[in-house]
Image (cartoon, rainbow, N blue to C red; front, side, top):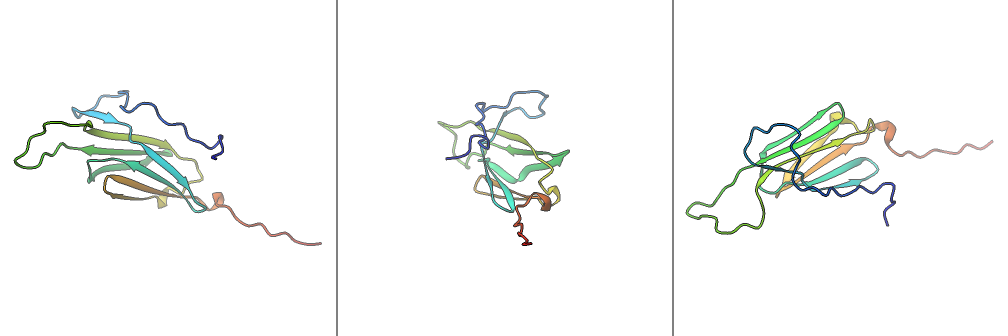
Length: 135
């Protein structure tokens, strides 16, 4: 069972509130994310279905990691949409990073609608073994 103090609260909103004006005429969603920790890294897995890898924008500014993904509606040639169970829109999510993350070494990979971010821990934040001296 996960330690309650470390557990992340699930965001209840699915659509992003509009604190600023958008330049695109579509909904903007907060993508779902899972966050994992290893000894060396923090790994963030973000669902962004329908987004082309070339339309993903990831920025790090003043310890705020922002992810934007833009999707376009593509219907197969010769077909027209009759029924849809999910809404199409853009994605935006921000995370505040601590100083324990090495921002210069962040890596991102995108495959099958899932974005994987690897956030390496800074050297001072990594767990290390402390030897005990006798005498």
